[in-house]
Length: 337
Image (cartoon, rainbow, N blue to C red; front, side, top):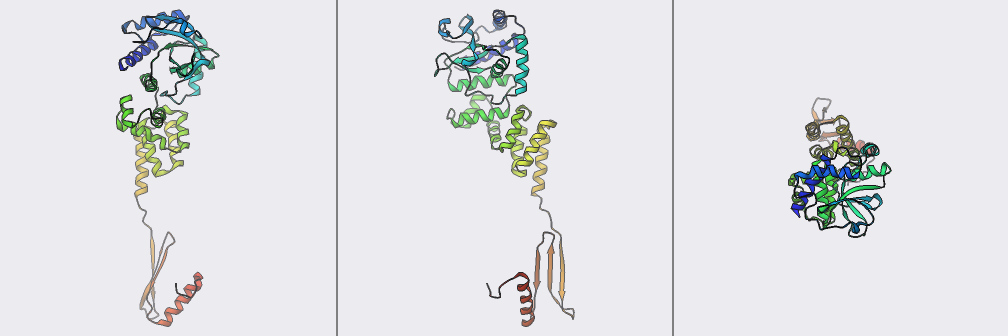
């Protein structure tokens, strides 16, 4: 299966690079075939033979050497439940829709038959294209068809293709990985490392993003690619020090001002130093003396409002008189507590 996935990835990326301009479906596929000539193992290596009769609900464009390219009705094409991407920028969708309206679909998606719904398909790669096609009023999407994929294969292929195009954000990864863990598709973070080839530290820091308050995540969802894993992890540390409101403001600054991860780290360290540094209070002391000048004690006051009376009266009557004054001032009962 690993060889098969590598072949799929190589073939899809070659197809994306090769398909520049095409006047109709047949010509588009012919150009893709030329670009794929350097991949003797083919785009869909080891795929079981298919016949056009199997796909009665779709229009077949080509079926060559086991590689099937068909037009799938968008209504029958469902999002990959384990897609690596989770956040879609509406502006990008509209941009691609305008291009599709003018030039047509340039690059096929990758889909697999839905095992639970005959005649339906699960889209593995091409979710932006699907949304753009629908926005442009198109009813079908050209897709290569692959089968015999597990749930983890659905995620792995999606991740590899998005990563190669530099389309994958840290927040996308965090959401997808959390789903894999919550649904038991992987049992521990180490398995995510094996799936993605990423280090344990990167996986752990990525998942930590989901511990940020929802209001901060909402800001990040507006443009997730603007906050990478390093800056995102610094945000999680900053939030523990500065709280939700200030973290949301910092996330907005990162996106609007393009702050680097080093700049975010510097802001976090400054906040941390400010919190750990104890502010020294200024105090004032007043000495209490008898008429003869004998020192009886002191009264100390601090800027925080704290007052401390420290006085020694050897005369019992004088001591009781002072206590009565203090009790009356603070409304204390005469009974000893």
